[in-house]
Amino acid sequence: MGCDAKAMALNRVKLALRISEDEFDSEITDLMSACLQDLGIAGVEPVLTDPIVRLAVTTYVKMHFGEP
Image (cartoon, rainbow, N blue to C red; front, side, top):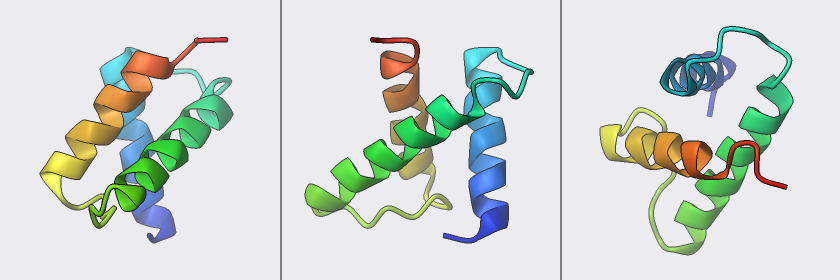
């Protein structure tokens, strides 16, 4: 996954979370990576250009963001 794709995905997820600050980028990026790994384990090719993968990542992050 290229740097531009990661940045675009991060911005999409932050928009979905209604977050504009950068202070949570590390947590959000970690959650995105965890989701992509889970998708890979499940046999799904984790490509952020796929709309279904983008939706899965966004949903995963929204579900887990801010959890201890």
